[in-house]
Picture 1 (spheres, rainbow, N blue to C red):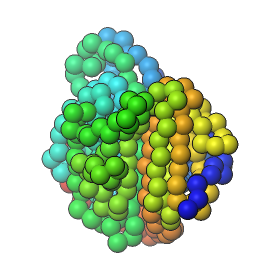
Picture 2: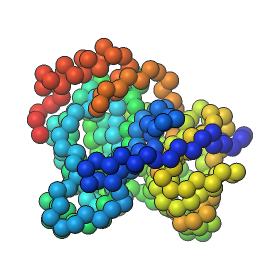
Picture 3: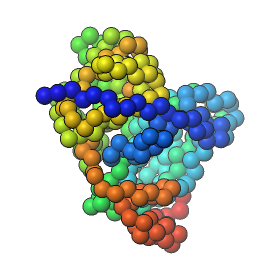
Length: 285
């Protein structure tokens, strides 16, 4: 048994979308993906004024991967061409399998646009292996109270378990590819230990605060890239912090992406474009 060590830290790069504050750690100048984790946008934290225009993510297509959206603060309305619709509040999560093709929108509900308020959202893309890229689309929206919380004995660590198993508890999302996904709140001095990580890639992004993974210190708005060896991980909070923490088996297949489509070949991308233009991604929304 051995501990995973950090190979490189990747700072999130500022890339605002209109008046939405956005920072992106992956893909970045020195990293394309942490297989199978393809993309992360960190929106906010910011406060929207009353009578705002809301989020800019109107109807758009996806194929070949999954989107996982963490609503740390604010409200988010989802609807898609398969008929799913929900409004998720602070602490909630949306997990959407685009699979063979889906059109969806992630926008602000009327209440938020009228009243304004704080907003902070994490948008994560998770790849699917070739055999699952054309799977049937599906969607699950979870409010905070539908997601189990695992708390350490000293009360300094609270893990919100979205998928996978930890400490005998299993998250409500059954990932098609065995992805473990959570958000973690830690108070200064808190310690989190994970094992059974052999042959799994860890995705660790510091949303707020500062942590230590010996001998490295990681501050907010940084993504950790780990060496491939090791099966244990120990995280210590140097300050109160919030983490996005996941791990999964790498897919190890070619990735060809074009905007909202992620496939394995250019021919598959071309087909996705044709299928979308032909209206094969479901009913208009």
